[in-house]
Length: 183
Image 1 (cartoon, rainbow, N blue to C red):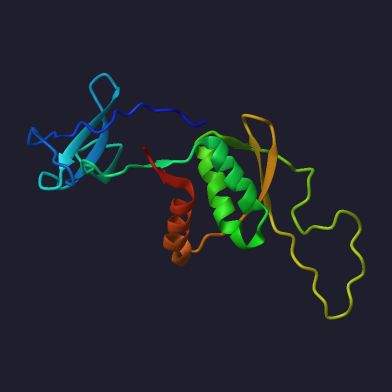
Image 2: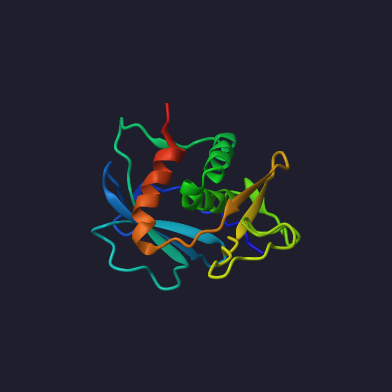
């Protein structure tokens, strides 16, 4: 079972140098337990960072936003579900649909459905017809069925194996689809 952890926002102060982090400045954030076992976030300037402190549970790199720049925000959940429906209907966009379904599961907008009784896409519904000699039956493609938590609708998405070489392209395509400028 997954647990939820509360981690605060960026403090905009360097923990080691005790100074404000400037707009556009790169920083590193670290999450570690305090003496009471609660999670604590510490932010470090790039200059003060060498490695994560002992006992760190996780760390990441970020940048302080510059003043006056438009902030990109993730589209609202109903819009994301609509995009998932559209992507799932197009076999050419199967990789994007699969990644979006995983993202929406992580955000708890959809949940996976155990559909052991429903066949994979491309699988025969009944007895297969006799194949001609030399013909091979196409392999059925595995399907991830997700249920939209707000309405109960089920969406079927082809499961895809994402290749490392496609990761940058897919990330850029997803960002273009899912993010918009905040007002």
